[in-house]
Every structure is written in structure tokens, then in C-alpha cells.
Length: 298
Image (cartoon, rainbow, N blue to C red; front, top):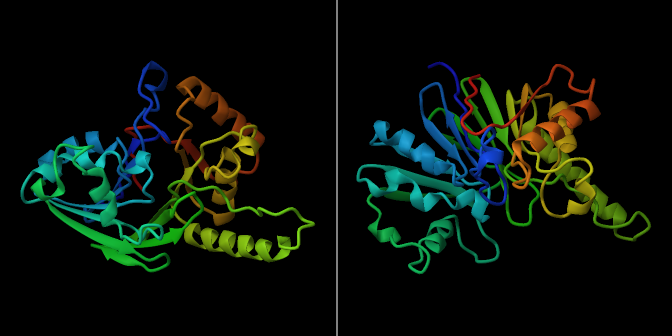
């Protein structure tokens, strides 16, 4: 009561990675539960982590689950068909997400594709809960109860919305999958200067979205050494996440979307190295590794 609870139900990117080597930080894919002071439920992304969350919610029914999808890649939506309240009358699943310029469809496409009969035994029409769809426009805020939610367009190989959530004087931002924008041209190319202006404007817009939040949850997939070979994959690094947190003057940074092949031990080693590489740069910033099942009140 009186504080946002921010449990992380999934911390891994690309694919679930269960097993003894990920038992400390978890192997489910992305899902974050957010509670406002009024106990309104917002769920960011619906990776495999939404399945354990759905069981925890069974004592609260009937419920309205407001789900914000950052983007439609499998690791961020694959838990949706197994969200248990969908199968129980009286519940509402309100799915928010981006317009898909390739298909020309709104966010309703995410459920329609997953629930094709070849891939899942229950059709959408057979779900007992009420299904609602809200297709969002980047930069245009919506209200979810007492919370103001503002989607921001970030950088990934599909439309990806980062979300700023504000309620009761508190705020958080989740990037989804995001690689800081960079110039795809060489400095001596004719297109370099014009494209650099686009990159700078995009970077400034992203920083404005993150500015001053209490909590920043950021795609931190790679190490400094890995980043050059992963350019264009649409993910950030420890360095880029810490840089965002510093520039936006946030309170706490959660590093998430961990590389699925990285064991708990390797993750802690990479994190310790990143803190060392950025020593003295924290300026009072609280930097944490996202750990599945953790709750953070602010």
C-alpha cells in the first residue's frame, strides 16, 4: 500500500533459459508487474514470466489486466495464450501495443496470430475473458486508472515502444528491446551529416522520455566486448544502459534482458566488470541486476 510494487517475472531475452545455471536470476522471458498506489494492475510484456504471474493473480479475480506490449517478438508475447485469467469468465485482458506497418494491423494481430489453430488448441472466440485491444500512438499518453502511460518509439528491428508510467508523483520507464541509435553511414559518406541529425534527434527524444524517472528498466544484453559484433541486433549493453541512467538522472537502474547463454555466475562477473568500467560514474545512481521474482517498492 502506498508504493509501486515492481516485480520482475522474467529477465531473459530472446528465449527462455531454465536450468541450474540460471536459477538465481531466472530463466523466464520478459514480464514486469506494476502496481499503482490504488493497486491498479499494469503488466509490461507477456513473455513466459506472465504464466507464474497469472497463477499469483487467481486470488484477485475478477480482474482487469492492462498489458503493455513493447513489441511483438516471441520472447515478449509467448506467455499470452497461457495467461490463466483469460480462461475464466468475468476477467478482462486489455492489450496495448503498436500498429504494425508491415501487415497494416493493430495490436489485435498479436493474439490472432498466436491463437491460430495450428499453434494453439484454444481459439480466441473460446476464451472466457473479455478481450480488448488498444493500439497506441508514440508520444500520445493514455490513462490507466491513476497512471499516465506514455509510449515512446525506441530502436529495435520491429516497432518497439518504451513506456513511461507516472502515478502519484512516482515514475518508471521500461525500454523493451533497445539499441541506442547510431549512424549507419561512414563519416565521409554524403548521407552521414543528414543521418546524424536524425540520430541526434532520436537520441534526445528517448532521453526526454526517460528523464528523471525513479526507476529505469533497460535492455542490457551485452558486455562492452560483445557490443561491436552485435551492432544492428537491436540491444544495448551495460555501458549504454548506465549512460542512459546517468544522462537522464534516474534514481535506480535495473539491467535486464540478460543474454540467455550467460549463466548466473557469468552474469555477475559481467556486471562487476561493468561497474568497474564505469567506476565513479554512478553519481549516486543505484544500479541493479534484474532478478526474476524480485519486487521493488518506490
